[in-house]
Length: 403
Image (cartoon, rainbow, N blue to C red):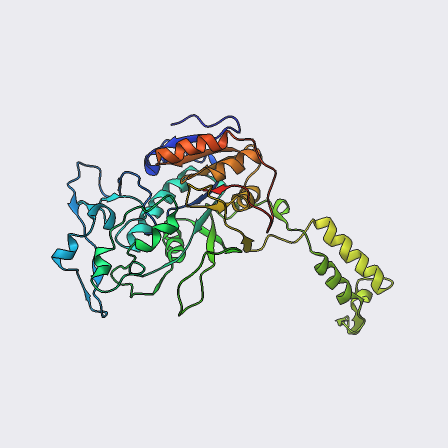
């Protein structure tokens, strides 16, 4: 087992997430905040890893993906078109024991991807404290052929190949068709993953919707444009720690004004002990103004409204190199709500280290796991920079991002 961090300096573990998680002691983590790779969104260029199966010397065979032919007929692509595929990216390698070798997110089916992510979260469940929580950022996708190509060229263009540092430049080349998912159908990864994790012992406590105030362009012309992702809150038990006061949102002036107007009107009456009374009479206030003062003082003493389950946040700034970007406000809300100063925060898919950076700023210890050596090196540079002021709350400017 590893030695847990004893200061706010993040501990970064490089390697396969399943292997490194096994080195973390049971029930040592207070909060987990992470975003997994998304299914068939991009190729990160990391070496293939082994997922599932039995522990033995695997014998790997190439696995091709079954596609739907042009015109809607179900079938497998012809042999000459199969040769256009990069098998290690288009479905990975399989062993007879059920093990799969490839890059997480490049599985041949969304079901297999969900199973692999749930395997990771099974280890997370072990290391999480009894009163801990997991905040998991995921998103749905669509069953689609590679963008901009038709007929047989779809098969030839479905080979995954990086086109640059920004995922937006390569995501359109990925083939997201899978057996059982008609073309253009929504593949609800967050729902599928939530149900699978529930089956494996997790409790689903909240499904937060992160509404992006600056969504990227959606080219679809026959459905609403997508502009949200999910941040699902899972817990290990029924009594997870939750700092309600720490994440209250300030009341707006409009809210305070509306409250005042509502309680000033004597026309708003309620029945009390068989007598029709005005709102301020029920509160034993001398006049509507007195009740209004009490209400506003009560609102002020609470420090704001409860954190809602819809968060309006801009996406983060990837600084020209990291493509899986969420804003600092997102982990800040999660960490503040679900942990205490000095607790250990874990990000098993650390990416560019945004969760670790925010955890350090909030006085938490942290552990990050990342397979990419390039990302680990970048995290070292990023975490060496001076810390920035708190960004918590909706709106505002995002100076850095990642995760």
